[in-house]
Image (cartoon, rainbow, N blue to C red):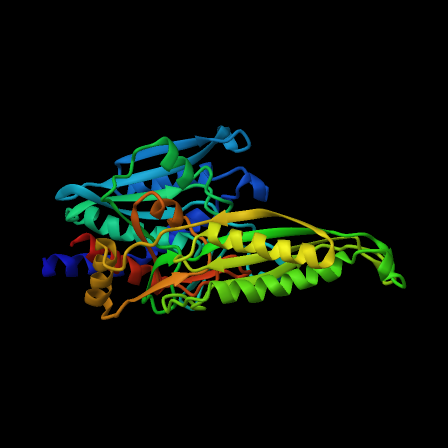
Length: 409
């Protein structure tokens, strides 16, 4: 087995030109969601299909989610299967096809849709997010196919739609409308990580975005006694929410950075147009990132209690709505997918992994909430969504080697 693995790793290292070619091909197709002014991922998906077939990866299945706004009315999800010696479970490597818009073109030093190679890096929109992980997955699988080897367990590469704007036509649609996953399958999502490639993300903080509307009574700035200052009440509300929620939900977890729950007032809408007008209404928002040991409902109950107290003190009416509410269970630290990835990192690159949680939301939550164990990991500089997005070519190879070793377990 050691000789076989070394042969696969050598093959991966020797074919850098193919990975650059694939990055160029993928970037040339503007896979933007309709929400971002595009027509979806179909052209990119079809180009990828042709590339895979030309490299011997021919067992392909398409799962097209209907979307009338997109080209041909579909959002494609592509699955490539590499048969293993065993099929008791599958190892999924999940990447996404869509990218985000370029943003201000004046900030780009190169054409975002034409990959430029410079100093060991590839520049272009999507080259890191999420094409780096996609190409690494291809490279690992292709090494087996090209060398006539089988992975120990069936490997499935999922190239999903719609990750950047909510996954309604991607993983969420697949989970609702297909049965492609089995409960004991393992899922690796190479769409996050760190520059050393040592972190394995297994959990996310729960997320609630609140919008609070405070209604008082508008009046002249010189006669606050004739009104009810909605701005003043909302200010007190913001401070109390921040301080009392921190006090109530005060546990820490070193797996996360920061290691505590956060409750931050953020966006605020304009209220009145004159300094001498006491506002009768005020709208503000709050971004809450909550350790998974607490539920969203626990936080909401405390929020309602605080709102009631401010209403009574200031004589105002406070209503709220949740702009986002996302709760995720964690992948156990001792799960098989964590063990296998940790072993592969150690054996391949002598890296001791670090198990972490994150504050942001990923597609992993959709899988974890239905009982699928998955990890988010990779070696990348986290320049996604930035102008002059880049990926390091050696990181494509490094992660492909890790995946190839994992596939042998």
